[in-house]
Length: 297
Image 1: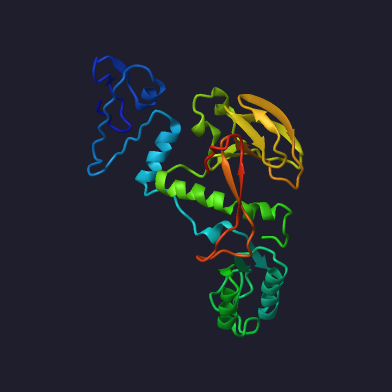
Image 2: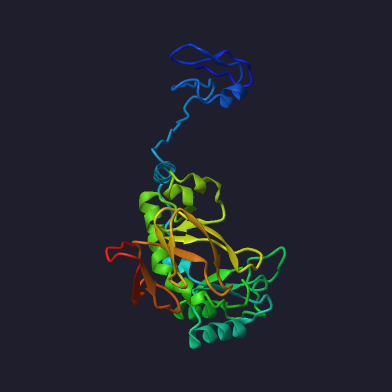
């Protein structure tokens, strides 16, 4: 089939020569007139076109990600916590914040400075303010020695679920590693994992995290919502309550809990929270097995 852009054509099936349409707009409205289509666009020489196929949606996404170089693998500390000091901070107050976090065992990997560390803000300069940060090089070196990564330019609170986030870092890192090597997105629609479940085609407010965990976020400060579980057996991350798959439940989750559910057969490594992460970090893991003892991470 030869298509001239923006012109009417007598577009035919390549095998049967049966008329399909007269415009490209009509062509895309017809989805069952043939099993083969040949498209030739004059004036587009030298362009490589990759057609990615697969038996299921996830297969196509995996191939696309790997063709594009594989999924990104962030540094592990990038999955940790970040804190940004107030815009009127000075060198001494920044160091007091840094020491307070470490002395009180509050996890923090990245320490950020708001606009104000430089000589001008909005529009911002790239020159350190000598009045507020007279020895900024020494300050940066001290912060790095304490394990902080520095971000120039979050809200001042620590949520009760923060230790859970830190505990999940090895699991999240594994998900990103799989993304890099196999192209499977670490966060993805449920339909990708269970393409035969027609119900999942209309669910946009639940998603998979890694291979064995599902999130069902709460909205508008509500504590309860309907959660649909794909095929299999699932467990409430907070209470270990068991749910049968292919069913919908009305579930109440406190606002200080994470609305997470774990698929049966998952080995979930939970790390003891550490103040920060570097290349020498060794985690103490407590592994939870959901369902059979032959679970996988």
